[in-house]
Length: 79
Image (cartoon, rainbow, N blue to C red; front, top):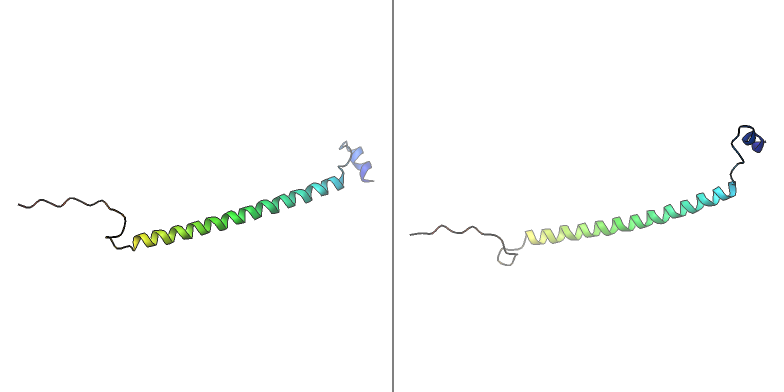
């Protein structure tokens, strides 16, 4: 009956349902793989951000004598 309806309305033969199901399964697996890669990248990015925060915090709390060189204004000359 389904084939008859497809033919009567000029839609052509119905697609191979098994082939479509295999394609859906393959795409679902591909999506799962890409999602896993994305999750790994997000974890790496979060770790890099945390390390950056720690390093920035350490630099901001370093005593000036041992910290990185900073631009200093020249002192006014006396006398």
